[in-house]
Image: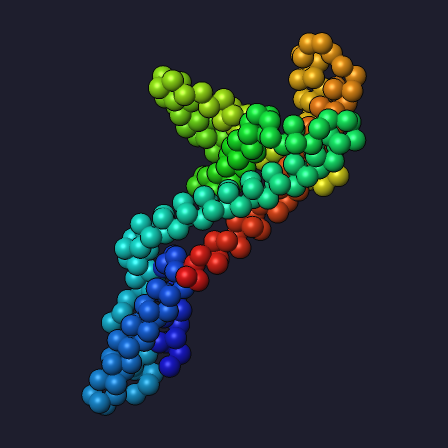
Length: 266
């Protein structure tokens, strides 16, 4: 019956239930109730067009039913979003770190730096934390933007900044130093802004690569003594980091969406 199918489709589509399994169970339950109602109406002598009117009248607005289901499963939806965000952040950050380390290892070998010394250094740990924080901020910004109707990037950026400042202050008072969050905040919001407001792919890549190469040069010049080889190596390393971030901004939404869809099928 067309009215039954439309009601079930309207409820399930708008219910925002995070799991395919749960949606299928609710769809079966709704169909069972409606089929019982239709069977009872036919026994009472009603015709099909009358049953459709009675069906719509009895079960009401599908949007209201969907809102009720959305409220019931709000915690499940929130848990799925948090878990999906955490998994996406770890997967993207890990993949990005491995790719950047592979590039930097080749650059280190070409500049005469021992590979094991570079990979097993404190710099690698710091770089891993920086990348993790940057990816986390970037994905968080893309998620928070959907909460706002206007000035969404600005509002998401301010909200993230406030949260991270509170976290840094709290950790500092507890004797923990998590300065990598500052880098993650700046880099993540910078990459998100470039992605949103620069429409040309070539221009986006050029801006990111130039800024990261310049940052590498600035940090190299702050070191003492200044070495030409060391400065070139630092610029090349930061350039590789910027190239990795360019790729990340392109694939991150797809990876996040794919993981979320996969989790919803569980």
